Image 1 (cartoon, helix red, strand yellow):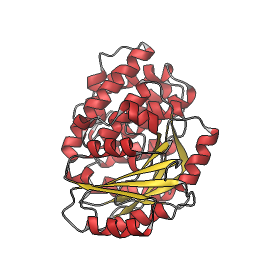
Image 2 (tube, helix red, strand yellow):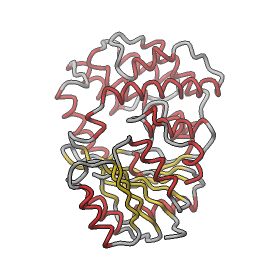
Image 3 (cartoon, helix red, strand yellow):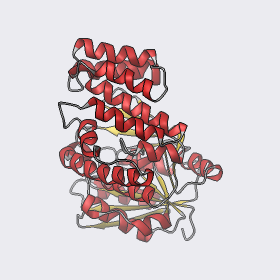
Length: 348
C-alpha cells in the first residue's frame, strides 16, 4: 500500500508457536487501511515458512528475512520502511482484539497524543488479570516514574516521532521504556485508551523472562535518568532519589520510610490533583510490597496519607495490615495468591 494510515511493526524471532494467532488478529482488524511490515530476524524454527504462507494470502504484508540482529535495530529498520502516519507495534505472541486499531484512531481524533496504548489482559499461565494504564498525558508521565506506562505491543506512535528519536540499540530489552521516557522529556504527548485492546501473552520462553536481570538493570538506569529530569523540572531536591529507587525496586531491605514518604509528599504537592492520585497509588503499592518485612509500614503509610490530605482507604489499610501481620513478602507464594484474589474480586 502506498498511503496507509497505519504501518504495523512486527519483528519476528523464533515465534512459530503463537505466530498464526498474532498475524490473524492483525489481518482481521475492523480498521483496514494498514500495511503489515514483518522482519524475520534470523529465525531458526518454522517462523519464516508461516510468514511466507500469510504473505501469499494478503497483499498488505511486506516481509523481509535476514540474519539475526537485535530488537531495537529491527524496529528501526521497520520504521524506515513505513509509509503510514502511525506505527502500531505488535508482538509475535500476543493477540490484538478486532477493534484495536479503530478504537485507537477514534480516541486520537478527540485526544491529541503522539503515543497511545491501551489496557491489556494477560493470557497464558497467569491469572488472566487486566493490566490498567492511565489515560491522560499528565497521569502517564507521572506513572512513568514508577513503571513502564505502556504495553509495548499495544502502542501506536506517530511515525515522525520514532524517526526522530529512534529506538536505542544500547538499551536492548528495555528499548521501549527508554523511548517513552525520552519522548516525555521532549514534551511529546502520551495516553492510553481506557479499554482492553490486546491480549498479552505471558510464558516462560518470552524474551522479558529469559533476560529479566539484564532488563531490570537497564530499566533502573532509565528510571533514574527520568526521575532526575522530572525533579529538575519541578525544582525539587534530588538528594534522596537513589535511596527511593533502591527501595521502590526492592534492592534495599532496610527502607528509610520517613525519607521515602518525604520525597513522595514533595512530589505530590508539586503535581496536579490527578497526578497526585497516581503518586498515591504507586506509593501505596510500594507499601504493599514491603509490609510483610517492615513493622513500621502501616504507620508510615497512614502518616503519608495524612501528609497529602487523603483519608487512608479502608481496603488498602486492611491489605497492609494483613500483609504485615502475616509477614507476607512479594516473594511469598501466599502474596501472589492474595494478589490474584484481589484482582479477581476488585479489578477484573
